Image 1 (cartoon, one colour):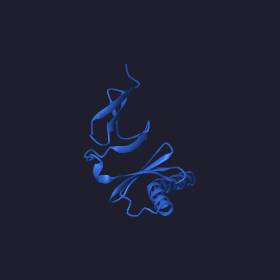
Image 2 (cartoon, rainbow, N blue to C red):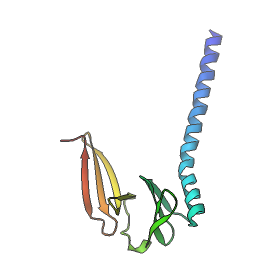
Image 3 (cartoon, rainbow, N blue to C red):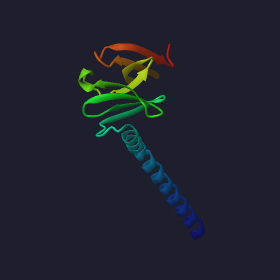
Image 4 (cartoon, rainbow, N blue to C red):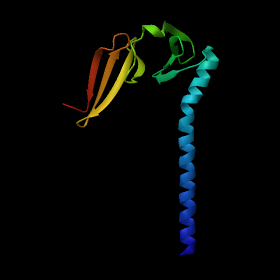
Length: 131
């Protein structure tokens, strides 16, 4: 019986250790993205970063950058042109446009809402799993 308890405790400790490693790696994901983009694109003081499809959307103190997967800057715009993102929506690049994206789970349905990055007006809404 003691042997069974010891084996159980060792397995629980091992699973806890694996869980800590996974959490640590997950927390390092954004830090690694910021480090790679800042080194390869020479952008400092990154305030926001998001990878969507094959593009990075990066905001520093003054500008918003759209960067491809090869770390080539596709476009750069002044951050002051953007509508203030009061609800902390993610910024994505979809159909050739930069958009704010929000996903809502409501009444058993997943709803994606896309807002114009300059005016904050809703451009599109996609209902998944609904009627």
